Length: 103
Length: 216
Image 1 (cartoon, helix red, strand yellow):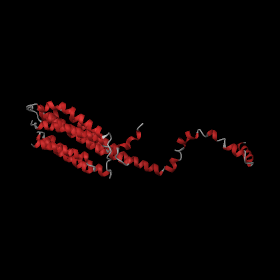
Image 2 (cartoon, helix red, strand yellow):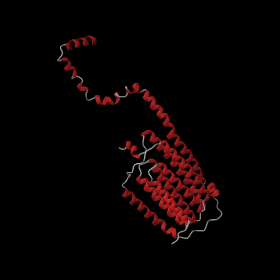
Image 3 (cartoon, chains in turn purple, yellow):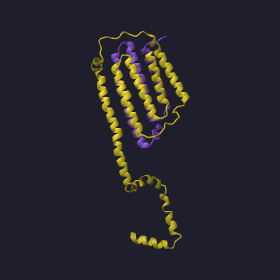
Image 4 (cartoon, one colour):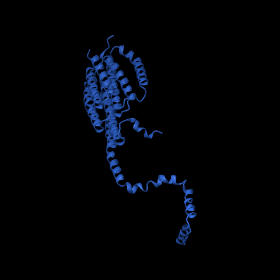
């Protein structure tokens, strides 16, 4: 069975979301967590453009992709600023150092 | 087949970005995955989204990652996983199976004909006007967030150093507040030294008399 490019991109998007979820589940490091989030974001981009291709609305998909890129980048920027702040305050980027509020 | 090759390369780059230990290498693999994603977007007839992904995803985000990694020096992420690796693999496999089951019927379907007469600019600026407004608001919120996270830290550190300089003055009034509840139980013990001082020493009555004179 030969898949169309859109179907391939859709499968790749699903795979990237799974990879990003795995990274989120297994890493303690704040920057690695952000890398996992970025990978999930790229999978969502691929799934969106593939859906746009399949439904014949590529331009709507492009508009949505631009919004997703802006939101994803801003979340990453805020996360990196948070990581720098945590590094200054706690001296580490390990999320287990943030457990001091744990009841 | 170009797109199959690109999908495989993107997945490999993402896997490397997760797997490598050094953060700078992870950032480089992530940028490579982003660049390949933008190539795939271009192949799927989305050139504007591709160029934005290339400039923002591969350019800006990579530079910010390198900046943040340089600001937080030398520390390899630990190997230990948050959840057990077997559980993580199982959950990821479950996600793949569920999403694959959802997506699989779509993959075999024929591609729809393109809806003619739309352009990205008209979609973005007319149909999706709210999205543009939300993007502008998001950019402001992001700028404020970064300013709030990074700039007050300087003031806080200055205040901290000021407190450290002022510790001899401020630390002395500070301890009695936590110490007071600790001192409450020993208060009945305070008279105890006093009888001990009264009974053994003969000079104590004289001192007591002196105190009484002072009181009088």
